[in-house]
Image (cartoon, rainbow, N blue to C red; front, side, top):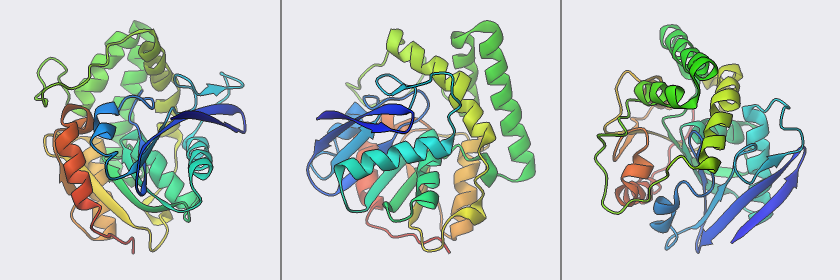
Length: 276
């Protein structure tokens, strides 16, 4: 089922599939509601899965395309989608930028999210000063490359920063390909020019997380150990006082290993991690 909800300054597209407790999936990077189609397929037998296009991507159209959008606005949009679908609190899987949005959602709307799996959040405010400076430098270089040389060159830098080699990735058989058609190219351009800036501007810190919040930090088994998103997940785990859960694949394991990723997700959702 595909629907939309009107919010302040935008019209947000969302999709609902499956039956059972509600699970919201926050996409990474330029991913829209369709990006995790393989993962969702392995979850709909257990959950009612909600995905959505972030403001500015694909079918979620902003009234003013030039208006700045930050993570608080993305969190408010997600809250509006959730409220449209259900009255009760939901479980959420946040992936990279989706995890950063999930943490914002949990902080600003604590009654909406009952449990959050935060997979390698792009949360620079969680890092120690050295890692924070390096992450800002790397993301700044990605944005500068985009401005000077275009999205293809910037895409290569993003992949290098995240430790992803698109030409040499181990994957499960039969996964869906997402070529850079016009829609995806437009989404990636938006991510590079607008969402990365929102990440750099975000001021969420570990002490801002609400006491009692149920958070499961997660990392990819094949992710680079020095990646800033990997380290952000470890800092989150350290703050909570639990080890980070390891998921199949790397930073984008939900795309490369959707079946195994779904199985791992079902397993870890049986655990309860409480923020001190």
